[in-house]
Length: 95
Image 1 (spheres, rainbow, N blue to C red):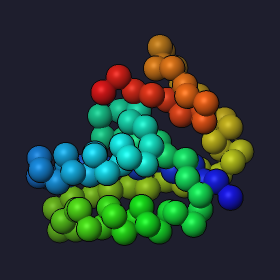
Image 2 (tube, rainbow, N blue to C red; image 1 turned 90 degrees about the vertical axis):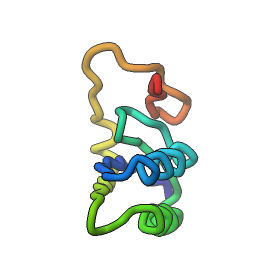
Image 3 (cartoon, rainbow, N blue to C red; image 1 turned 135 degrees about the vertical axis):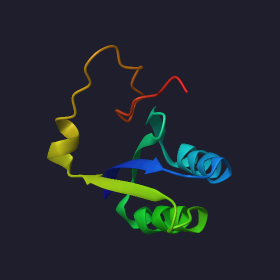
Image 4 (cartoon, rainbow, N blue to C red; image 1 turned 60 degrees about the vertical axis):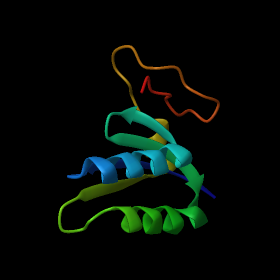
């Protein structure tokens, strides 16, 4: 079963921030500088969390993971001029 998550982060170190951004890019799409939207199988979510935990320093960094229920995902609104959507309904950023 697919799940959509939004991952937002504030990482103190440039190198960790870059590593985390690269890891998240492999999972989903950047929608803001430090925010990614990811669609994955529910069974893959734990792997994503483990990968994030391996990169961050828990005393200096913070990562928020928001799980979107299907009805909530279907009600996402984007105001202004959004980047184009891919086939999965995810926004491809300009980053």
